[in-house]
Image (cartoon, rainbow, N blue to C red; front, side, top):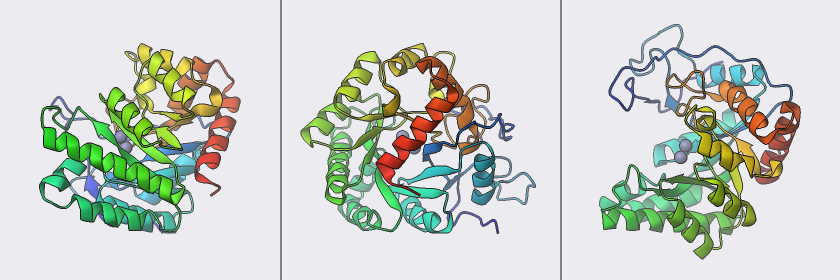
Length: 307
Ligand SMILES: [Zn+2]
Ligand SMILES: [Zn+2]
């Protein structure tokens, strides 16, 4: 039975440029030859036709629909990331209902300053600490630093972001879980905090650094997770960074419903579209697609355990 999200949060129907997006679902790609894991998705955020009108639109897709589509495309498992308190609570329940999922919980780096301004950050971190101990929660994330949406000139906001990031890294170490790190225009600060906190099992989600940063992350033993951004025509620098990463350090993700891979950029995203990203990544690494998929699935199990 297909259920609706407990707390649907609809993605905006307009893009960053203010223009209406094409909300129709892209067609299913050719399935992958070997099943992989989507390392990072947000199933609590609803997109697609009718999503924010809450209508009975026939093309509205539920979580169960999206998981079935993903399985048919060779992506039968995913890591569901809930990165504010309602989404983290939703994630703890969703991973119980759907055997395809394990979960991650955290406060997003853009959420931390908002909570801090309201005097609620400490309580929220405490609740994340409780939720992270729930069954099938296998990673702390996404946490990190974001100098794009949080104003770098707002010292209090930046301090709250860093404090929250450090608290999440400590929680992950305490629980023996890996940590998924969000890094937007904040490479140096992210690397500094991870080093200062002696972070242990680190996944840089939606990796966006250059060749030097990729080399530094590999030297530190981190994993690099590549999203649809690596397929974009203007992402030559990111593909160069990927080319220096050993196969066993590479993960694939959607960050759905955002960052839809080419050729469907701007439309809704979901785990069934991972094959577009996988094919580009295999090409850049110059390995057969089967070999990439086998490695990615094994790496995901190494990090999060079997499911
Ligand atoms: Zn992120
Ligand atoms: Zn995300």
